[in-house]
Length: 302
Ligand code: BG6
Figure 1 (spheres, rainbow, N blue to C red):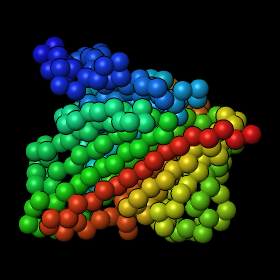
Figure 2 (figure 1 turned 180 degrees about the horizontal axis):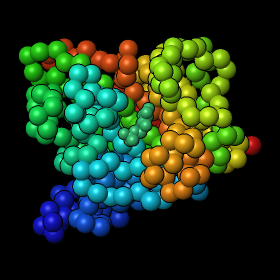
Figure 3 (figure 1 turned 90 degrees about the vertical axis):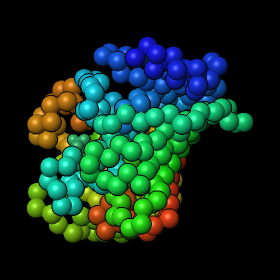
Figure 4 (figure 1 turned 120 degrees about the vertical axis):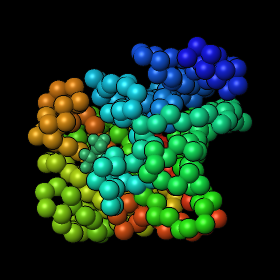
């Protein structure tokens, strides 16, 4: 562990900006602090745990009782769901949301950019848990500055087409989900997955007064989380995504899941996930590369 950590620091630490450290039971995390923000990233799952631009409240929600455990996904931050979203299409024994969020990713590169932000690239190749072709690797580049950008790049180097599903499963910190709305999905069709699955159409902004678990099919337009309580607006710009999952577990599911900190733990979080899911899964042909990209920006709103 110590030698792995010192090797990582020798190769990829950036003076005053990025350092690797081990927490808990040998769990390796990169801490980032630059002129724009602070962030922390777990190598397991390439899981961004926090991002806080200077002068702002934390943008990502993290469960107060989140466990950092090998082989388990962390409740909060941005889990990377890959190479499928939700249940596997044919094999119920494969883990929900794919295996990428629970395996170790390797660091490929790190750099400070001219605008003062910090970028890190991680990849998993050859780790497929027997559930995916090892000729279809994935990399993620996370750029942390005044804004936060993530790009998930999947390359099909195999001889066959593959079906790729994925999501950047962002948990956002909100003041009180009952007062928050998601703007930009008016008129979109969605699959409502609470109870028996139903197709519906969104009218107006998405608001929250019950469990919400929906896969919206959209045009890849910009979305906004409007939070009057925090006087904050989070904008979500994306490329190569035409599906968005909006999820809040509400009271009963929050109690059942048990890792939200308290029975009211659902109130200050909201997931708005940039995805290729449901009818938006990608048919990736041999030699094709798919880039799922998202950028989050924060603005004050009065
Ligand atoms: C969301 C799904 O993306 O993830 C929900 O729409 C699910 O149905 C949630 O409960 C959390 O999933 P997990 O596997 O992290 O508990």
